[in-house]
Length: 122
Image (cartoon, rainbow, N blue to C red; front, side, top):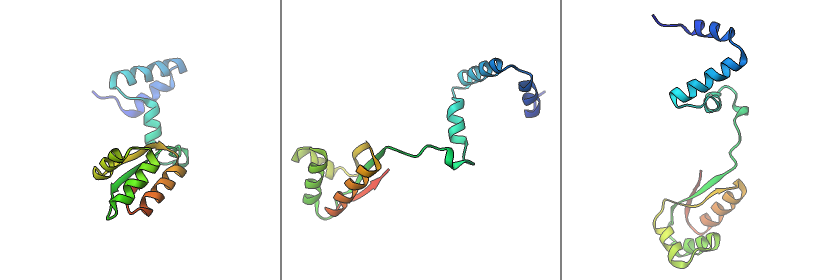
């Protein structure tokens, strides 16, 4: 015999707040999930409730036709040596910088694209 969703809700209505909290903690432990994560990911109906992304990654997808200019731009943006910047350009797709602000990511993308690179912001 299976228990219906309505029966579960009825049983929850009769519990104290502390009993519900303990039940949630037990469910999180048993199933290896987090109720807080489920609320954030499951709240598709309220797009305004989701936090705005604040950290971005700049990904070099190709050095394009002007590899030398892209290497120079990479050196300027990252402080890498010539060998490291060349290696980065040649190993595209590769993250140039990670966890940076939107403004910094857009400025870096603009600089790299001006040098001839193909760049994505994620």
